[in-house]
Image 1 (cartoon, rainbow, N blue to C red):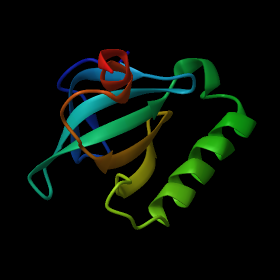
Image 2 (tube, rainbow, N blue to C red):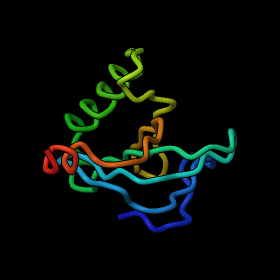
Image 3 (cartoon, rainbow, N blue to C red):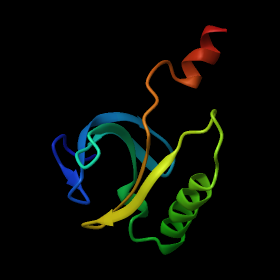
Length: 104
């Protein structure tokens, strides 16, 4: 887990973890260059030395960046800093899909 206040790419400040998946953790962050809040998906430490997972992560970023639809989050950036592979995306705040389904 990445501590609050850590910067990635000398631009994105980690503000706190907001979720976790199989391959990555997701953090709320601040883009200090464009002065906006973002979601930052960071590849989990278990996979950082596995070139296959790194390639999957980077391919996911490229594929998502190519999608343009109002119901799909935008990918703004992808990078690597001090061994951390990250993807910067549009931050969508509100109820999670999981919580929404459970309420139905």
